[in-house]
Length: 563
Image 1: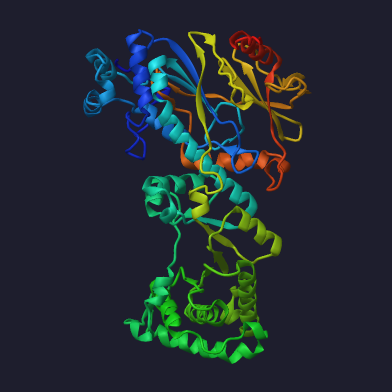
Image 2: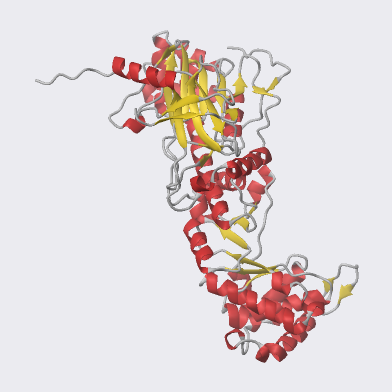
């Protein structure tokens, strides 16, 4: 089928960033169902599906919605290529499929779809659909798996990142270091993107930086330090200075500053003194400073943090200051991060106090980055025990979501040809809320959201200042009247194929979603966000929808007979 002309108010997005997101990125049963619909002439029936999740991850009470931009890129470009169709024709399950079905697929696109969605970066809650997808049954069913895979992981990582940000606090720098531990290149790049959306400041992943404009950060590994055997490995000791002149022998400057440090070490507390530092490490720091005089940050735990790494770092830093540069700080990648960070900060401050501001200005405020298998629980423990860390490099637990590896989004039919449908289960959590719905967030006078309310799409929207009854979908006794000070409609038209695609006034870029995530979390009541035993956020239905759910439930559930 040919696509309708694009309205001036709508646009189509470029293809997905990941070129694996093709029309064939689906489960086999999508195609087998599509053929069955087509053969039965049911493929054009009008259907509505909800994409939702049932429980917040990580034992928390909030989730960050992510992945919408990629969903819209996928929908904008959905088409079966001739190569796709040739592959399908030759699959064993297609042996009984009629040729006309493949002819139909060759012209299929998303021009008949309409999608309503919450906005990317929003804080979202269980049961309230993230997306509602409407259109002809076949195409609505065909896009199921791809939409799920684009939302599930993205929302899980964004939520994980947001939780790390909450524990670390607003002032700590959070660095995503997970590429080497991620589930393949696709997982690594996606994790970098959605960690940034969720509140991280930068990534080590250059490909993600290139694709999404995320700031990239990195220094050096232990291998760089180990590769040096001494100052003989430095072949050019010259350093270009900020005024355009040249320091002819930076190595000699470093050695001079080490002599100065050795002269004051007896004035330090006993446990901060050193004897002889590792000279190959000092040479490595010196060569790194020669390469990056404006961004000198040293990994100080290759041999011994306090007895070697720190004094070597301080000597190079003093040399940099003497020629007009400012060192950035240190990184610790092992050991007791609480104890070591505090002792390193003390040594920095003592150096500044003993040598004075002219030689060691700002040393007491130098950065301390930690990157030793850090995760949410470690951050919480560090807060309890005290630390002096200013930046955290977080990898494995962030990108693999080790604590909970899947969000569990589902895609459920809620209406067919205008008739609401319900999916029943002995597990009440899996019972769906039937029909096309609108959702609203109700706010109190203090600006805090109090409940997300689902209503049938035929009902009038809640009005600020007017009392409305909010009911638990399934528990009869759980109900409350709410008089909202403000009402926010949660669903927006994000795709209208008949009008040409994505509304032009809908901003789906990463920076907008990142800012929305931060603002949404700031609005939440602190007890919904806390690390231990957070208060569940209320999700309710209107009185009319509540009655309809239970009426349809009774109509669809078979009556058991006991003999």
